[in-house]
Image (cartoon, rainbow, N blue to C red):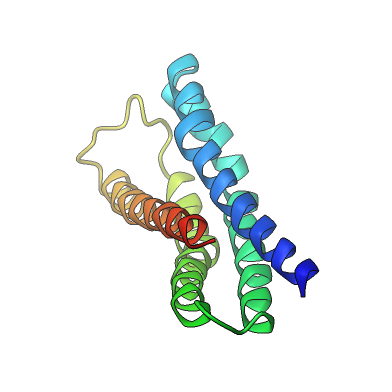
Length: 146
């Protein structure tokens, strides 16, 4: 059971750490050091793997949590389920849809903010950001519960 608990802690840590690193370190550095279009293209290349990483970590964590069944299982499992749902929405709905919309925007630097495609993209980006920050917040709570 100690091995399962260690795998659980590792999955949560990798999920939270990966999300925090990508959100608060790598993405801001890219957008500060490159043009918006170049940074957006680079980040866009990482998004499919980033979101699927969250789904993989979430699946491992929820399986471990169920196997460990005991004190604190239900609250932690609910938090993980919400985080996993949000990561799945990002991986399998928001990211593919945003990538498709992005293909129709020649440049974020020259395309007006009022452009219909840009507005659609901005809306999806906002939803994704809320999902991402919610996953990070859930991860912080799970680390505190450890």
